[in-house]
Image (cartoon, rainbow, N blue to C red):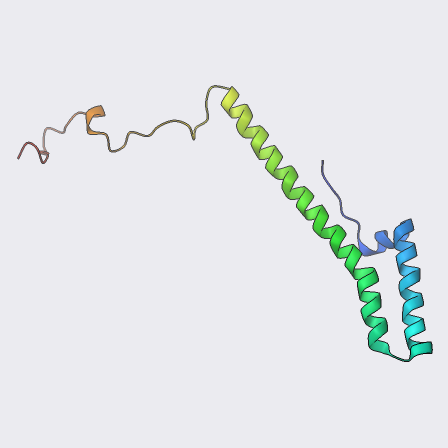
Length: 111
């Protein structure tokens, strides 16, 4: 399931985006005209418009990460079903019993 997050202009075209945009504009105009405090309007607009959009983007990013983790797990599962993964095989690099001693070099036990 791949997500294509909406851009800010696309988000404003949705019903929720239109409502949040209208409420944000109303709060900004109210804070400037009636109350006379610009900081209150800026904070309210930021909370009402930027907050939900950033939450949506974070949710979309987390969903993409979960989707990628599921695809990785499915690929590893397929590898395991096909006869073993390359990560499951033991490596015998330091096992002296599995290799023949070299004729030119004497090991510690032979000295």
